[in-house]
Structures are given as C-alpha cells and as structure tokens.
Length: 97
Image (cartoon, rainbow, N blue to C red):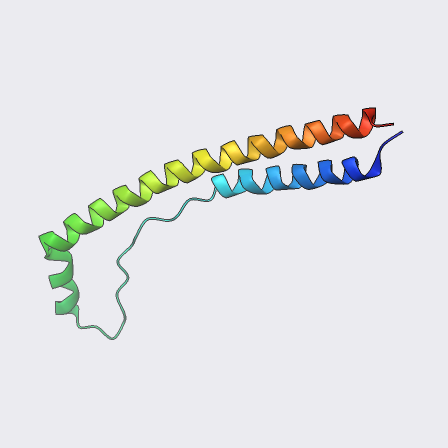
C-alpha cells in the first residue's frame, strides 16, 4: 500500500519541520552585563553609570530583537516548506504504486 522510500522521506521532512518550528521559538537572549565576583564594587558602579555603555546596551538589545524577529520568520517559513514537502512525500507514498 505504501511506497517505502517516499514514506521515509515524508518522516524526515516532518521531523525537519518540527525541528525548525522549535528553532523559531528559541530566541537569542538579550545581553545582560554580568560582573565577576572579584571586581571592586566601585568599578561596577562606574560601568553602570556610563551613558555610552548604557546606550550601546540598548542599541545592542534592539539589534538582537530584530535578529530574533527575522530568525523566527525564517524558521517558520522553513518549517512550512518542510511540512509541505512532507505532505507531498506522504501523498506520493500513497499514490506511487
């Protein structure tokens, strides 16, 4: 009833679709300034009060957010393509006798 190579291809495409969908749900986390425990408390305060550093961190977080939006869109498109390929392979496995 089923053509085995097309059925295997359908399973592979469906698994790729699942994986790429989950890639789209896993964003790059925003940057958090982590301080080492051996640093002096006065050095930490200077770094947080620097307007150049805080402006850079805001711009960098905005950049990461835009990358996350693009990656989510791209991974969802890829997942949809693999889903269509899997459905096509499944259909061919049913018809290909």
